[in-house]
Image (cartoon, rainbow, N blue to C red; front, side, top):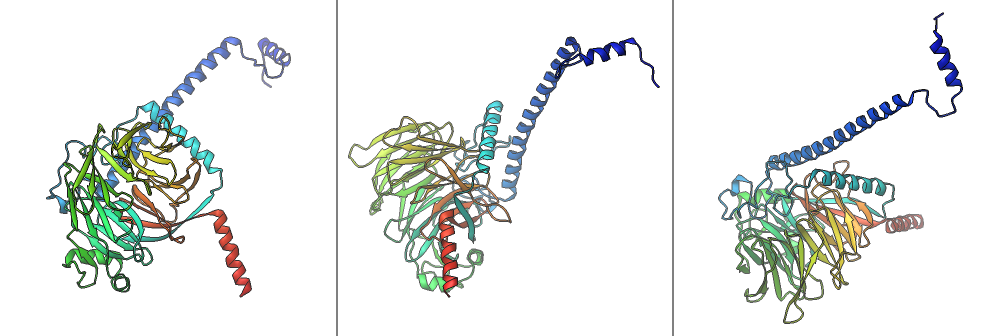
Length: 496
């Protein structure tokens, strides 16, 4: 049996006399231990912050490596593809450069400035907290992948939907081509290759079978988007086979050729006047006028019939990144890398302008609602909802964990937000997150998602595109509508 000295007996008596929760350690030892644990905690905090910063750098380097491996074009005015090495497009100074320091390249084509370490960590933690909280909420919207549209040979910058003779999609790609696709069959019906640079945006005329494209070759083109619809739907191969074959075979404007894919090389009108990349273009209501936005820091207003430039709008301090028009009023919004966007009122001869401030980085896109609201998205990882009658501050700010690219608004007020991180999230105008498009079971985009657009077909009503060269068609439906459809199907089955 071990022997104990008198100090053990004293300690035992002292321990028995202690109140519950008190320590047997002398106060000096306690103080020393508290200091040591405090230092250890600080060391762990420093290691955690360092780990987060290293993870940020690793994510950026990994993204950059994937971008290089995929040989995709990441700048609207230039191409990384060797086949386009002799393109007439300029490099536009230092703005169209791939960062080698691990900084991320956004869909705007300009390297994004770094965020200070502490601020970046704070933003990351805030976004993670928001993500954890939202994970406990039941999605009010269900999303499922319906189909894919394949065929482009480089990243796709833009996608738009329209109802011509049939429901169609328009695509604009860094492979210097634009396409018109059947929503129902998924086939490419018409390929336009009149540009000599990356095609950065595409929009269809409000009432006629015309398409408008903006390009890195400093021009915008208007071209005929009409084809022999029924013949083209019944004839031809898959979209990938069509694009591959069209690289080898020659086609004329009538679409005669080995497989019947219509290829158009001659525009109806060329809008020349910008001195740098034309990043986007849109029709004004009625389709009699067009607005273009350029890296030369100006937006030009054009007459559709004559191709004449009517007016040039200036004022932005840096390159323009997007332009959009109001669906029913003669209002135009231009966004810029100067972190502002401007609303131009063309309803009166004076053409007044309002300047909106609130973002901290490049504003990548903006969209009007039919009411008095406007939604903007930015590289600062926020989406903001504004009242165009009061531009002092945003009504709603949605904070996210990745840069925002070209957003789109549905007719019932849903915002589709495509991200650099390959995700697409859906919000309502109050800022509530409703859903995120699935990226499991090999579904979803494999590269940055650049653009989104809503369609009218309830079976396939949202389309997204990205640097993985694919357009994806989704069914986005409220859970109430989905449950009602299930009940109706169940009822019809019972009746049978």
